[in-house]
Image (cartoon, rainbow, N blue to C red):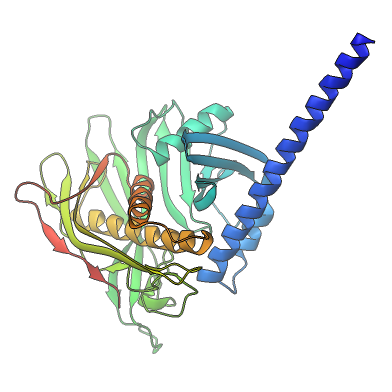
Length: 366
């Protein structure tokens, strides 16, 4: 009788754990679909890439990695039905969860397979460059949710030997009679890292884009610079940066001071205004960022993506956050984006830079 009772209790516990797991997966599936649908409606309402992405996610493959008490990474396997033409054999999508809310995500592909723990460690290193890179060999590529390339890195036993990322090169008027604010030439900027510590950077023309406001439809960021009625969140144009930002070569990196940075937003549910301003920010890139131009473009892309993420966050939460909470959210997203867009070391501090460092006042898209 005791044996039968013990078996019954074990079965009840197992069924309870299974039910909890299924409930958690269902909750995450609902949150993720809502998050991706909001992104589609905000940036590409007539496109099909987001539906394709949603249908590719294996929600039962969830791997939850705790970063800190209120922040987690959620990793899911993807099928190979995406519009990604690299030679990868493993696709994963990574979601950032803060205080129980999905706030951002990216797609990560791998050209060689390895154990799951090592894959997770590679992803953690890409998000937080100060974490150790495992001895992985192969190409790791990052894509946004619309399957545009953000960057790629080629590793040999954990050491980077090649990296590349799309960058806008020049603004110009369209040559075919179309009316557009501007057109942008896009290049793949590839850096090779040699064993003697030297690097070589080459640029390969990709294409010219004229179809989005400000011509900024390039890989890695869907940045709107021309207004156009959103449904709350942050302002469509007012928080996004344009222009060129100066960086000084300090001998061991590039450092630039950016002043006049702010966020003006409206909380969707309450209609209350949010106004955050920083006097200055000091940003330093290590040797993995070879030129001041690339440093400037990296900062702009990271900032503008943080504005998109802030807009999505304000659309999702039911209460108006405090100014401190908004400031911390923006800074956390900005640092995370810089970690993804930067090959190697970077640091970001609020406040002015010390010494004779180039200073640039923020120029906002209009």
